Amino acid sequence: MKIYTDFFEKKGIVSGQILITAKDFEDRDNKENLLNAFDTLFDIGVVPIINENDAVAVDEIKFGDNDMIAANVASMLKARHLFLITGVEGVYDKNPNKYDDAKVIRNYHDYVNKEIKFEGKTSHGTGGMESKVNAAILATEVGTDVNIMGVEEIAEILKIIEGNVEVGTYFKGLENTITEEGVFPDVAICL
Image: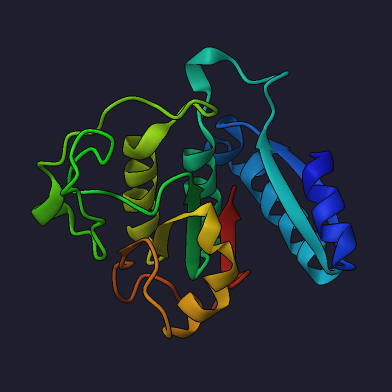
């Protein structure tokens, strides 16, 4: 958490942590309270740093990785765009560690790319690329556009939103699923 607060503090931005569990999305009152917390933070200009509340989450109802947390939060907030940040350039057509001819898929379509085989998880996280792809597909179902991209390209986020640059792997949100009512931020970022 300190890394994030220090990062935002250097830019003059206040951040605050929100700890959530999968149950917060299942229980109507919890979900409403969570939405109110986000609304309040956005109103006062605070950037929320979201994490799973491991102290109270039980294994049966855990998210298990930050990718699914990000997708669920982006879906709940009806975010226009979600960025899933990773250590590689995007989703590859095959394992780039094994095949020199592996290429980044620039536009992911589940019906075209469903044959991709994912191998392993990241050394630091619990998800891996398959988790990121599943999270991206979940978020697109409510109309959120998603980019899976390398950490080196994080400075390109505003250009991506404006449509001026193609970075990582892009997942187009389903049309006509986000309405102006209830839309909170323009961007959700998972690091």
